[in-house]
Length: 366
Image (cartoon, rainbow, N blue to C red; front, top):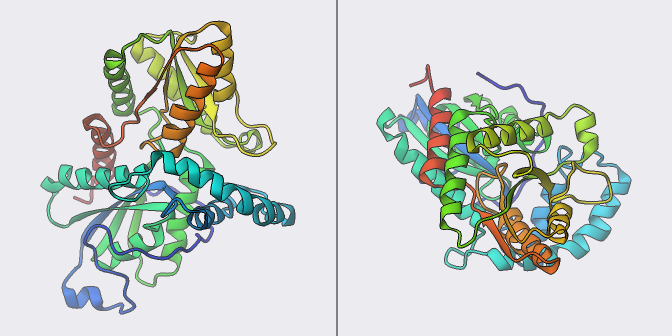
């Protein structure tokens, strides 16, 4: 079922080579017919994005596209444009580049987010093989490369008349899921021969997702050399004003946490909900993860674990912000043992979630 989304033009970046063997973009509208490529179905998974490299120029390009999105920063007035161009883009890229350096995948020369999303697409393609050769799986980033625009056009050129779009955000927010929809429909608006699009709904309360989270937490706790006194469920934050205007995101996060507590048989004091990654001076969703980590350590908590259920793949916000920055905060204030529980990533449990979501949306098409 098609999920209605508002439209806004996406940013443009240098287009990479097609990552999954799909044809490159072409201007000839009859290319598909001549190649006999018709009636295929595409599956496109989409994550947030990443710079192409850790140098300041690459990070600046990424941040400019990301922070120029009116879904991410809703007030794109003259004051914000001045702050963005005169302050943020002149000071922040170098600092964030150093953070990316700490987690960068040296073997592939890319961020872990890109490595993991590629692996998720590869494994999803294998899981769906039994549905027939007409099915194609690809992956994209909302900001950066490979761009969402280039992958939708590549799937169309490959003969995909129908596309299932899976934003890799379990909990809906206008700044995440909606902006993926915005960019996808903006791409379709440029095409004369449009594929039919289905968008996978948020899956914050799906039983397969809750079970995957719970089983991964249980397995990781068994591997830890210590027993955490409590667990934080840390979600990416958004400004409180967005929620006041009707964004359902905190309700989705709360329901995920409630279901996870129920499955793990933990109380609110044993599995706490917090929000991370606030930016700027405005009030964001609370309680804040870093302030909670500090307060727990000062209260005498010695062992802490953090899980990040809002992220489908480990990235800067989990591998650096939680595993490095918040671990430092905890230990600097008296804590001793700190662990980040990995995201579902391309694990068997994580792939079971993505496969079931896509299979459901493919009903009636295959």
